[in-house]
Length: 108
Picture (cartoon, rainbow, N blue to C red):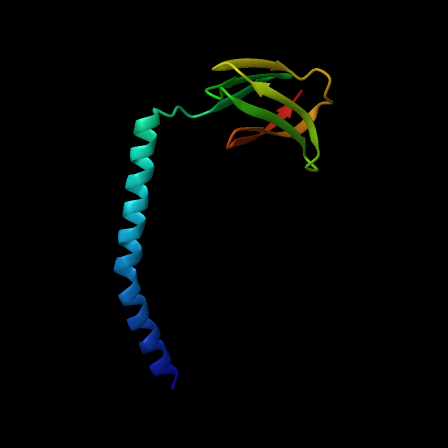
């Protein structure tokens, strides 16, 4: 009985594999096409001491979260490049999120 179940599962997986691979290739092609149409630049977040530099995040919200998940700071980014001073925060680990990009940083 165990061999029969494995055989049936194997046949089922083989039947589904081409459709899954084809769907994944189509989805990847759509993502590339959208990125080319919108000329999307990746959001970059860099840190030096307690100064953040954010690039390519125009018209997004920058959120800073403590390591426990509490939102401790939020600002709207209206320009392609923004420098944010976080001197009011204690030194330690934080999660920075700008749009769909997130990064873990250590503020000194």
